[in-house]
Image 1 (cartoon, rainbow, N blue to C red):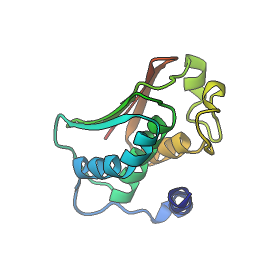
Image 2 (cartoon, helix red, strand yellow):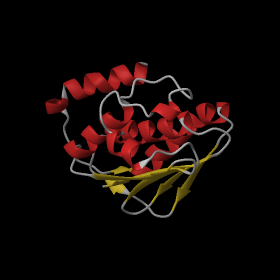
Image 3 (cartoon, rainbow, N blue to C red):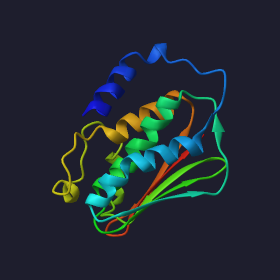
Image 4 (cartoon, rainbow, N blue to C red):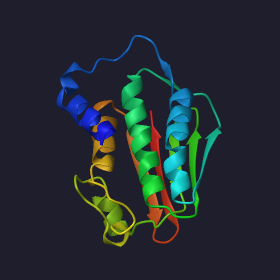
Length: 162
């Protein structure tokens, strides 16, 4: 709840968000989020792992990158049971893939809408349906892109390209 409040406050002041002068190493920020979310993943019987296929530096506020990656990892942990969640950093972006419940193409189209929660997953977690809409808003604000692929019963992959 604290992270959600902090994110909403930051979005309310979005005109005040300035780009830092220096680039940040995304690999370190993703590693930190993986470490922070390890207990949540373990509670669902999941294996959470980090793969670094490249080094990624971006000129962005570290907090914004952490919010985006944290929301993607949290979603993956919330909708996966006894499975795997993989965060992969490449030289162009970050991919989060899970072996969770997955979504139909109709659900995936709505997944980034505020307060949307797919029917089949409502029983797995208590959430507000804001995580992916926050991700989409931040991605758009900073000129990045996001793609999502999912299949019911097989899992979901989200990729941010910086």
